[in-house]
Image (cartoon, rainbow, N blue to C red):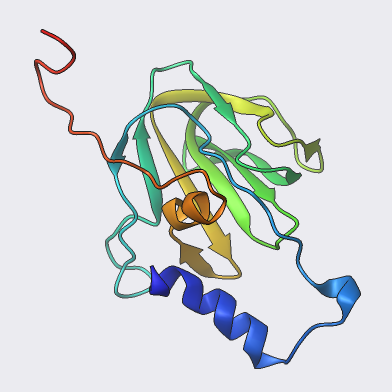
Length: 161
């Protein structure tokens, strides 16, 4: 957890307190989908090393993907053959929704919390970045009072059989 908060602490102490007008606004984050997390945040040891820079959800293809918080869409479109949406929030963080089946917003659009940004494929990767640092989205959910993410095993026979 401290790794996710360290960049925020360094940002806050590096230049002293910012003027009132430039202070980031607190943002409450909600999970973008209702689905089990199949791969939690695993920060890579190096900038281009292996890991998982967000939360990967097992989603139903065509399911609704919602903005985790309000903000401005900074990117909406394809990257390396997959559809992505990135939203910049009032706290200066950016969330990205990767592996979408369709995109419902466009760059420059203001989105409200929970607004549909697209539809999911078989999985959805949701990342949270502050500057160049990837943060654990589960920590942001917990800090927002939305509870932590609970990992659900994907096994045959679950669900009352």
